[in-house]
Image (cartoon, rainbow, N blue to C red; front, side, top):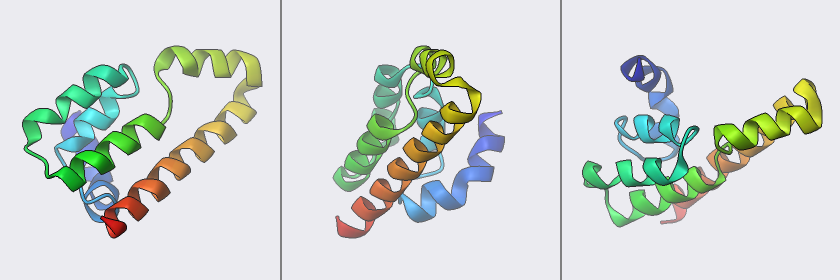
Length: 102
C-alpha cells in the first residue's frame, strides 16, 4: 500500500520537497504518530537539507489522528476539510521554499 502511495505522490515528494520516495512512508505514518515518523527518516541517510525539509513538513503537516477527531467534532466536516487543506498547502509550500532556499 505504501508503494502505491509513494508512486502517486512521488512528483510532490521528490520534485517539490526534494525527498526520496521512501520518505512517503514516514509522511503517512506522521498522520498516526509524529514522533515515530520523524524517527523513520533516520535510516534513509538523508542530507542535512532533506532532514530539515522533512522535519518541517512533518511538523506542519496535518495533525495526528487524535487531533483530527477533535477538529472534526469542533468544526464539522466542511470546516475540518478546509482546515486540512490549509495545513497541507502551508506544509507543502513551506517545504518547497525550504528545498529551494537551502
